Image (cartoon, rainbow, N blue to C red; front, side, top):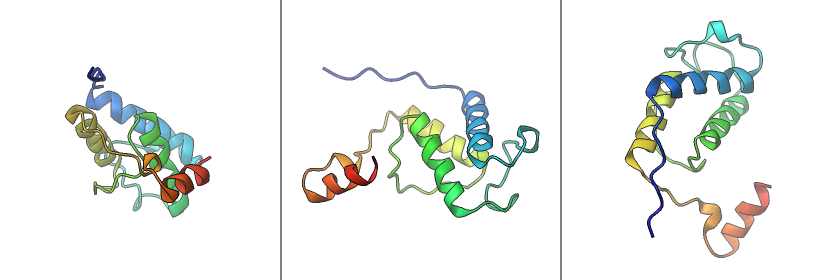
Length: 112
């Protein structure tokens, strides 16, 4: 039995959600300062740990494995386009935490 395809939000909805998550996770920026063209690395002095947390929380919100190795531009629109393309494709990547053996158990343990 195949899993049902999840509905694909519009790019505009994804951009708005990504902006909301960015503002919430970074904490010191106002929503009015952020647009789809915001360069996450260049426009603000944001610590790399905060950027990692933003990407992690964004991927979790959209049910995308956090262990994706794909590259995408670090702009609000770049992140949003990646999410839109990922959901639209119906792609399913294996989460390394689901692998059998010691490595999978270790990754599950550290993600608690």
